Image (cartoon, rainbow, N blue to C red; front, side, top):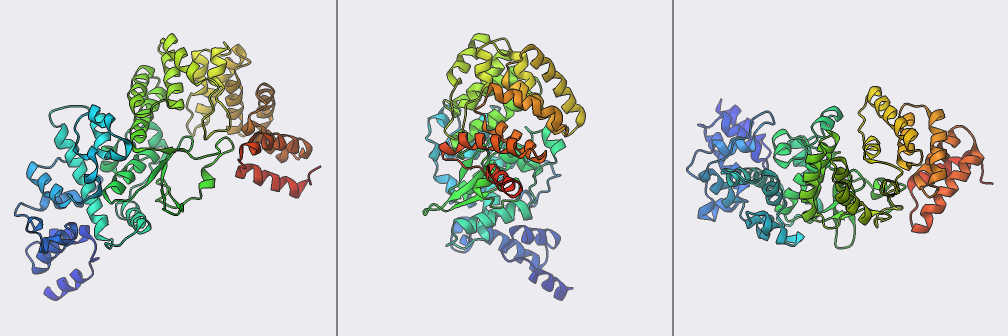
Amino acid sequence: MVASLTALYSTLDPTSVAQHFAFYELYPKTVEGKQALKVAWDLLSGGRSGSDPEMVLPTLDPKPIINFVNRSSQTNFEMLTEEELAVIEKLSQHLGNRKLKGSHIWDQQALLSLPPEEIDLARGLMLVEMGGGADLKNKVRSYEASMDLMALQISARLTKEAGPLEKIRAINDYIFSEMRFRFPPHSLHAKDIDVYTFLPSVLDGRRGVCLGVSILYLCLAQRLGLELEAITPPGHIYVRHRSSEGLITNIETTARGIDIPSERYLGIETKKLQTRTIKEVIGLAFMNQAAVSWHREDSKTAATLYEKAQPFLKEDYLLNMFLGFNYLFIGKIQEGKTLLKQVKGHIPEHAISADTITEDYLLGRADAEAIQAVYAEVDETRDSILKKQKKLEGVVQQFPHFRQAVFHLAVTYLQLGREKEALPLLEKYIEMNPEDPTVNYYIAAIQFQRKNFNKAWKFLKQSEAIVFPKDHQPRALKDLRKALLRSCPEA
């Protein structure tokens, strides 16, 4: 038995805190079990337990900390005692986020007064999302302790000389392989997207949408002294590292941290990737929650959440537009119009053209109900597409010059594989809005599939003429041009 236990102990990963804790739990009274506990503690303390008297294995029962490290996603989160928190915070006092002023604040006004580079993302997010309550500090500190232990486990696998790329690989291995954080199935995240964004929920269930896992990644990076940027292509967020030489490493948090080329994130309408500060990321969390309420047709809550995002996203074009729309939906017409007038005609630096919904509303080409129909969500089912289609048909009949209603009606036909009905709607739209490069591309692609090559060339060139002068050459246009050249050389 002793020989087999020794052999089993020898198979443990020497850098794995979790494995050594698990071994101790199985064999706590054996020599090997006690050694496993000591090694796990040495790994967590970064080897300081032998030289620093304050880092030695504490006399308190290690079980709660072991449970915290090896907790299953099926296990309910339990807050730690003051004594347990003190031990973990002592172990974690050298982590990078402790140098930030934001790691020492406990109120939102202090948070808002900080420059973005001084904000501790985990502390800031939980302060504003959890609100008040007698147990707020204990709850926040317990979740922070969870992330501290995660960072310490990652750090145990790194050398002191580890550079940014080694840290990224170690975080990826830990989050996606060891802890098995995953993107939830579409049917789940569409229903409970707020659950998969809220940081404590992501930690508890180990499932998160792009924003939820990106936030966790940034929190761990702050602890490990790894500088990352938050990047927001339309409808998405991921993180990236930029080296001192300008070399970019993208980290796609919905695909286990793989490095996807930056070009893949650009669309026909998106010429540049938008970088967000840590302070703005907190605002994005509120925007995400607001979007959930909006799609649940609770515009009053949505407006409140968009308002909460405002201090963190000063003069944000998209925030002001969405808040303006939701003001309209709840009858705050003047407030809504005031915001929409501010964003009308504005072209963000990362975009090719301005949004047309705001302009059409202010010109009387749409009302609040028509805007709601455009933003109505569809899921993977045919019924939901048909339901939106029926709404939009009524809107287009009432407001024939509401451009986005015509476009989104065409999209519903494309989603159903009915290009024949979509094409005349797209052509009607392009007559009203000829400077839309995306719809010019859609028409070109449909005409190419129908082997109407001259028409395909016409609309492709129109799309190129819009985006090329703005120093943007989208991959989709390049690919369609290559396909056209193979089938029908340019006239």
